[in-house]
Every structure is written in C-alpha cells, then in structure tokens.
Image 1 (spheres, each protein chain N blue to C red):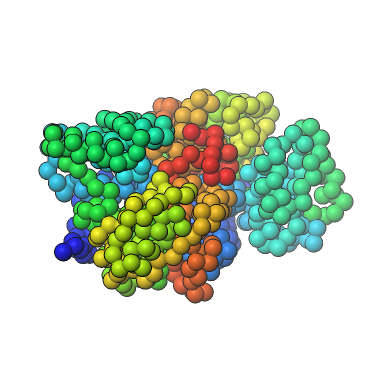
Image 2 (cartoon, rainbow over the protein chains, first blue to last red):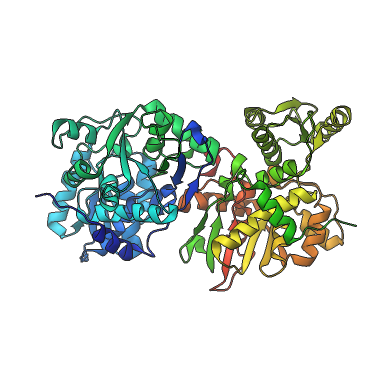
Length: 311
Length: 311
C-alpha cells in the first residue's frame, strides 16, 4: 500500500526545517499582469536555498533520519542533487553524488561548490544510479530519493502551508509536475480545500499519462524542461495523492514555457528555469483560465539556469 | 532655501502611489549570509515596476501634478527614463524621452517598449538634455526630474515606510547614492531613528565629495555603476537631508560591487545591476561592519542589467 502524507506530517516537517530553509516571499501581481485573469500571486520559491524548492524535502529527509558517518548518497546532477549537497553541508554530513559524465559542467561545479563528493560515471543517468547503488551497499550511506519518499513529500508540502499563511486564503494553486514530490506535498496539505492544478510540459507528461493509464507508467521525456521535470514516471505517492486531491493536470508547450520565462524577467525581474516558469505558462497560454476574482497562486519553483538564457 | 521633505509628505505619497507601485518583498537572510555580521534583511526593490525604485518617484510626481496633453518629458536612458515611461503609460500620458545616440540599444528599446516617444540626439547626455529643454519650452510638457524635486524624493521615501512596516523595526539601512533622491526620501522618513548609511562607488562619490566640500559640487563620474549612480552632483534636497539624517557615507570599489552581484545570484538567485548591489557591497567589503545583533536592511534597488553579466 502506498504511503500517504497528512497535514500533520507537513506541520511536523515545517517545525523540523525551520531555520534551515527560507520563508520565500510572495509577490502580489497587479490586475492583468502577464495578460492573465484573476488575482495572481507569485510564490518566489526560486529564491530558496540551492535555487529550488528541493531544499525543503532534502532538509526534512536529512533531519528525519539518523545519518551515518558515510553520510548521504544520491544520483542527480539537477535540483535534487544540489539540494542534497546543500543540506548535507549545512548539517555537517558527507554527501556523495553520482552524475553521468554528460552532465553540464556548470551543474557539476555547483555540486562541488556545495562541498559534495561528486563521481562522474557513465554516459547515462542509469549508469550513475547503478554506481550509486553499489557504493550505498558498500558504505551504508543513506539514499535520499528525489520525490517518492514520505519525508521528501512532507518537506515539499511546507511550501503550501507557507503560501496559505502568507496569502491569507486562496482558490487555486498552479504547480509544475516532474516526479510529483512537490504537487504531492502541496495537495496533501491543502486536502482539496484549494484547487490544485498540475502543469506538465508536452515533453514531460508523467502525471497526465499515469492518470490516463490508471497507474504510473514509464514515459520518454524530452524538451526544454526535462532537466528539472524529466522523471521517467510519476512517484507512487504523487499518483495516489493526485487522484484524490489534484483537480486537474494541464499540458503546455515548450514555447509557452520560454515565453513565461521571458515575461517573468521583463515584468518582475525574476529569473526562472524552464521548470520554474511552467506553472505560469499554463495561465499565459490559457491551459487554465481563472475566473475574474479567483485568487490564484503560481509556484515559481526554481531558478537553476544560466541567466543569459532568459532574455 | 532648499525644500525639505517630512514624514507626512511621504505618507501622502504612499497613499497616492498605492495600487500603482508594488509592495516589494523582503527576504530575511540566515546568520552569516554573504559572510556578513548582523541580522540582515534584503529589500527586493529590484522587483519593482520598471526594474528599479525609480517607479515610486515617477508615479508620485505624475500623480502630484496636472499633466497637460503634451505629457511629460525627461532626458534619461537609464532607470529614471524607464520609470517615467512606465508610469506615463500606466496613467495614460504621453512621455517624450531624450537620450544621446550613444545609449545602449537595449535601454532605448526598453523605453520604446514602455510606449515612450524616444528621441536619440547628440553624443553626450548634455546634448539630449538641451534638446529636451527646447521641446519642453515649445510644447509645455512637464519635466520630471530624476532626483532633485520634492515629489520625486517623497515618492522614493515610501520604500523606507514599507521596509519599516515589513521588518517591524530596524537599526540600520544601507542604500546606494547617485543623485540622492533615494537616500533623501529614506532619511526623511526615518528622521534619525534608524541609522542611514549611504554607499557610493569610488567612481561616483557625489555625496562623499559634497560633505567634504561643504556643498554640492560637480564631479567626474565613471566606473561600473555610473549608468545608475552617475549623477554629476548630489541634489540639493539630498545634500541638506543627508547633513541632518544620514549617519555616514562609505565608498566601495567596483570589484566589490561585482562580487556582491555574483553573491546575490549565487546565494539568493537575485539579479541586481551594479547600482543595485552597491549597498550590499559595503557590508561584504567591510566598509560598514554591523554589530552582531544589529538589524540591518540592504536596499537592492535595481535590476536593469543584462542578466548574462551577473554570473
């Protein structure tokens, strides 16, 4: 049976991570900002430690577990790897991170900048993952999953608790979906009292496909946002939670994501990576159209991109 | 006698500009962030309309005056010009803006993007200014000064009122100084109950030099932040206000400003232009050193730069 997360798990996570994660600001937008209907609030989670919401789940995971001297281990050169490296350093643990040799130099440098022991191995993610499993078995290091563990989901859920308190009430939250840790945490906190809309790019439709097939299935991923949203299948926790507490999942094209990135810079001077601009893209492209007075929050969930690419 | 601004002028300005300017967020930093002592809060005024605090003064100026059909006029391709163009469009007025032909294409495009009627004329700022004066006399358009008018200063002062309310109390505010409109507004609001520290780059020391000479004097300006802080002399209002209510003015090198820009991106994913990172540079370079428990706010006052330049 799939683990489920409740509001109490998220409240406990919020206490655990307090002082380690940032309370990121919201920005209430003026009427018609981005050409979008509704009363729009941006949640600037892109200003979080390590540049994405992943720090919430990473801190909650590390603080929920006895970490051995061997430290933590994961295979990810992306936002999750960065968050694990950041949290491990902050808490005084070793972090060993496996990435394929094809990872961009900038991402590898960032992991090393956070003090992680980075191993570049193989051409594909699967090679890096396999190597990480061998070292995990050998050393006893604790594996931190990117999305499909209860502590990770509960940590991500703290962002919904924060938004609700900051805004004083909402009708709808739009959130990008990759492996589903973020939407699972948010939907678990909101329990249907706020409409949760998942947004996927056409190249990364893990939740869309799972809901259509009636179960999580492996998909081919690609396109602009694949580095952040490109999990091969939706997590079990996310799938089970989404069936109960996610109103709908909509798809956007890469061009809409790029337009949302440009609009965030032009109108608000906020840098978002493609995955971080995906939720706004759904509003701008009309994939979700709020009512006139609808109180809508958009999660700008990451900024780990070369800022030269957003203008 | 030099005009002075009081808290009541700023409260009135705040009412006037409400709904036109953004309440920009603050971000409370963790202990030792940026290697700086004190309890540090960033005021993210770089997320303001038109990308800098200048929108506050521009809206207050336009809303304080009867604007004729000929609209408003100014000579500036920088943050002030952008703010005037933005505010004029938002309020339904014409904006005529004069810039030297040597202005960067990106800045001119931005002004046109805000709907301004832009005239490129002459090689130097003085040529553009002279042309603007001739058209002003001919058309009756209202000139909006970048810093040395009471309505401009009162508008900029609204940011101090906002910070004080958002933080619930402060010991010190650090703010970059160019023509001095921003520091004059802030010091006029705070009236000495919070320490105001002005920060200038070594290439733009208008207030430093005025305080040393006992009066505003023309200086040669240059260096990294000159496009935003490069007024030739401090405004009369700013000079008079600074003598009473500014604790001190410190200087920073361009390299420190560049380091502060990089640190803002690396640690917070915030893009600041050189002038926008100048106040933080003073802390990072040790030009101002807070006490351990000192509640310090740093104004990140603008983001109008090519984001490719900040990494």
